[in-house]
Image (tube, rainbow, N blue to C red; front, top):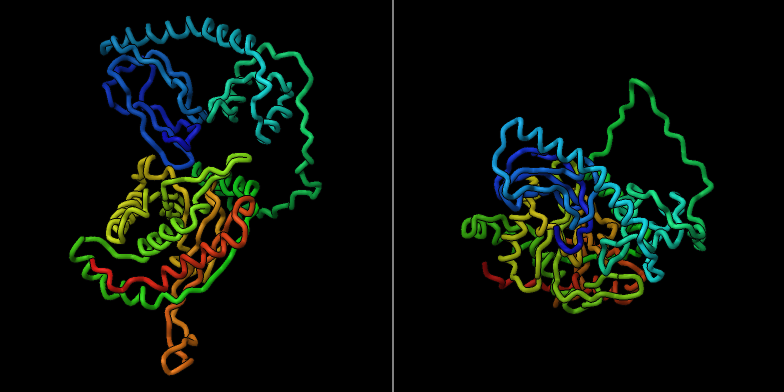
Length: 419
């Protein structure tokens, strides 16, 4: 599922216990916070056990089902026998699982995130008991799914003092505002799965990173003129549309090379500086939801190469055909709010990145410019850029300088660029 993905939700099983499957035949569908994926069978054989059901959240690397690779396609009566065998051995498996949990030893060095602490307090787990849970995250870090899996099989809790949290309480005493709902007039629309994940991701980002937003205005007249002169040629030569997005991505990638400390992630007290410059594009879907597809190694590509990739990613996103690897690994994200007519925006950082750029609408305005004749008023194509950054690791000097450098690259776009 990719290095950044730690768990996935089962959408549906396409096969049942006792069914025969061919190698590479799709047996279930799963969803992550990035994209939906089909899971193929690694072998041909008969499914003898399914361990998780629809809507279960499962850690990456967990066995979902068992397949008898030597099994041939069975008749209906033989399928029933396989199901019965599974039911008979299940109690023994559960007993063994609980024994394993009972024998777990506490690891005093285990890192506990605020979320894990909160769950432990709610479930009355002791400190030693939580630290004994095997972690499936990076470097064995305990994740939410690990705790819930432990609770599901827990019969013999470790006897020790309850876990304590010395942090200041974050709950507010302010009462939740009442929502006025008019029966028969107002309607209730339940969030779909993707919208729920987007909501969780946005709240997590605001709670994790202290956001600061800086703005600049740039004159993109030369860039706009070049694009207008070449878009038809580009369409005829490459059968591709030439939008502003690849030009923006090229400018951002160059600026990241100039300021590599924007291309980082925060891991507790450590700053991870990424060598690859992978630019994410926030793309609106027909459903109204949002997804971020990624142009990998954007600094190593020219405008033409980026344009082809951007068009391919946008088309795949609109048709819900993005592959997991096309939505993973971004190190910096852009959001073109100008597409919807917005003058500027205050974007929320796409975790675990530390900055995100919003590009406003390009509008013609009268501006004072300096020419050989002195100051004069001219009609120019202007746009606003806004950069939200994580003030834990990006200060005003770095954020402002990086944003100004992007503006410089856009204003100084090489109009001699050939297609």
